[in-house]
Every structure is written in C-alpha cells, then in structure tokens.
Picture 1 (cartoon, helix red, strand yellow):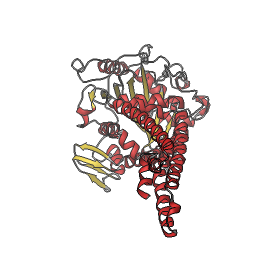
Picture 2 (cartoon, rainbow, N blue to C red):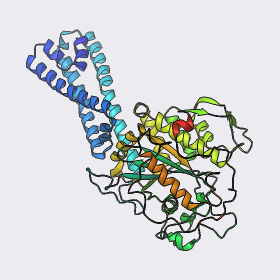
Picture 3 (cartoon, rainbow, N blue to C red):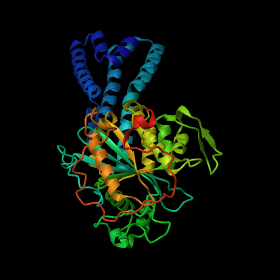
Picture 4 (cartoon, one colour):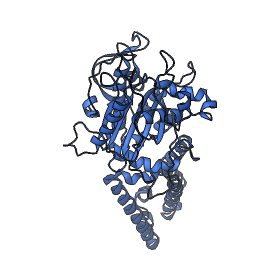
Length: 477
C-alpha cells in the first residue's frame, strides 16, 4: 500500500490502476504525461537559449507561476490522499492504519515542499523587483515605451552608469567613489566598460543641465583643489534650489559623465559598496587573480593582507581588494574594481543565482538603487544573458594617457568613440575589442574648453598605459 502510494507521487494514477480504477488511472497518467512533456520542452528551450527564461522576470508571469505551483501543490496533496484511500487502508488493522497514515502524511509534506519553495522564490523575486525598480516613470530617466516588440524604444545601444557609493552611518551624504559606464550593444551584447577616476576635475555640464549656468567653466573650477567628479552627486542633492528638485544627484552625475564621454546615459544603478560584501557572500565568493599582495584596513593595512595568486575572496576581501589604498593609488584601485565587476558578471551564473536566490535578492534589495523602470526588467534580463557570453572590453581614463587634473575633453571623447567602434568589429579586426557606434552617441560638438598643458593629476598612476582591453587580458580570467 505504501509502495503504490509513493509511486503515485512520481506517476500519478499508478495507485488507481492498481486498485482497478482504470479510467481514472489512465486519465491521471495522460494528463501527467502531457504536463511533463510541456515542462521538458520548456526546459530544453531554456537550456538551448537562456533568454527564454527571461519571461519569468515579468511580473504577471511570476504571479501566474505562484498560482500554478500553489494549485499543483494542492493537487499533488489530494492525489496522494486519494491514491492512499483507493488502495483500501480500512482493510488494515488499527495499528496498520495509523502507521500508513503517518507515513503518507509525511510523504504529502515532502511532495509539496518543492512547490512551496518555488512559490516562495517567486514571491521573493516579485518583492525584490518591486523594491528596486520603480513603477512610476523617473523624470530623469530615458523614456522607454512599454512595447513588447521594441522595449528599448528604437535604440541599438543602451548606456548604463554603474556607481559604487560609500554612504555609511559615520559619514554625511554619498560619495561616488566608483564610476563606470557600461555601453551595451542590444543586438550582440558586446559591452564597453568605461572607468572614470573619482578625482577627474572640473567636469563640464551640457547646456540642458541646471549646473551649466552655475559652473560655466567646469564644476567648481573657481576652487583651487575642489571640483572632483565624485562630489557632483552630493553637491546636486545638497542644492535642490539649483537643480529644481530633491534627489537630483543621479541626474547631475549622468549629465556630467554623459557630456564628458559624448554619450547619452540612459539609466543608472548604484550599489552601496559597504553592502557589496553581502552580495559577494551571497554568490559564494569571487575567484580573482591577485597580481600582488594587497594590504587593507586603515592607512597601513593592519587589518589583513590579500595574498597574490588565484584566490577565492570573501565579500569583505572582495570589497577591500577593490578599495584598498595601502601602497596604492586611485588608478590601481580602478583597475581592481573593473576586475571585481568582471568576476561577478562571469561567476554569477544562472545556477548560482537559482541556488542562492533568496540571499542574493535580500542583499540586492537592501543595497541597490536605480531608475530603470519595472517594465524593462524582463528585457534587461534578456540583455544580461547576451552580455554574459559576449565580448566585454574596458577603457579607463587614467595617466599618462589621460590626466584627471587637467582633462583633455576632446581626447576623452575620441577615445570613447574609438572604443565603441572597435567593439563592433569581428574579433580578428579589433585591436583590443570594444563596441559599435550607435544612436546613443550624441551628435553634439566636443566641449570648447580644453586644457592647454596637462599637469600632474591629484594622484599618481602605476597602471600601464594603453587603449581598451578585454577583461580577460586585464584580469586573467
């Protein structure tokens, strides 16, 4: 009796056939076979192309999955109970009925557990997406039509500003110490990662920015040692009377960086760098090639040392690997931060995300901020799948090629355009890899102000000069 009941959990209808209820048993087996084949077909389609799984990121689809697995859990519970009953437990003595009833009860709970886990995962996903991605459009974000056929509103390239902020309880405001722009080709997924130094001085603003009138000659150009790029966000937030509203730091920084690169920045995403450690721990750590010993903690690295070699770093180690200033400079940190981003992109595989989804979602919900609208979540997942298997190249604007103390804005724009153009070429033609010119590159002229004689930047650079390179070359992936 227990054996046939247990078999019914795997092959619905088996117990009914054993008990002589042939019609009911055949119907159950047939329905189960159809559902199993449909699930197998979808699984194979996802295995051949992960983009097919992106439909699960849709809010309506997640709700549908929750309903389906809830109904399936109840159906499987009812199936086991009826399978047990049709086998005639009343033929057993009282002790046998109690024993088999308890075993079947435990089996029912075990069979319902996967459905409950799936439903809980979907509930967590909906909650996370709801907390991070806004339903109401952001006035400072690119207008994206809610069109399933063309979710990116006719674009061939989208530019995301990726920010690492260092807000903390013992610090006022947010300093954007890690600033990158990911320029993504929507067709191929090929991506160029532009890294801008935190101490890039006196950035210009486009004519449309309220800060252009405030700083016509560059951000805080009248101050002898001020006007660093990582101050723009907080300055805008501190002066709503100039920006025309509160929390305009993202808009100001998007304007400044977009004008610097001659790109239209479509969206931004900011991660609290102190919480980034939680996200790394959530995926089980990061494997990174450490070129030389990195001391961290305070001015003298008294908290610990990350040894050279191929290492699997914990969240705290990965954070300090990208942030440590001990025996280092800002530009070395930028290079390490790019490698952390690249390692995370490579190692956050679908399997890792699924098996550790609750931890990842919890960390992201606490730490992330973005203006990407919710209706773009599904297209964004599809794009992320493309990027994962595409060519990712990187260019950082550091000395001796680029001086952050006296930037050559024309040279920066030309390098940006070339990096994007190179990325679109076939691998044999591209010198170091980048991405194609696109509508996201604005047609405005380069800023007229240009440094006559570059001077030494606020911090030195120990990195080798050169153009855009693949992350495999830079980081040894």
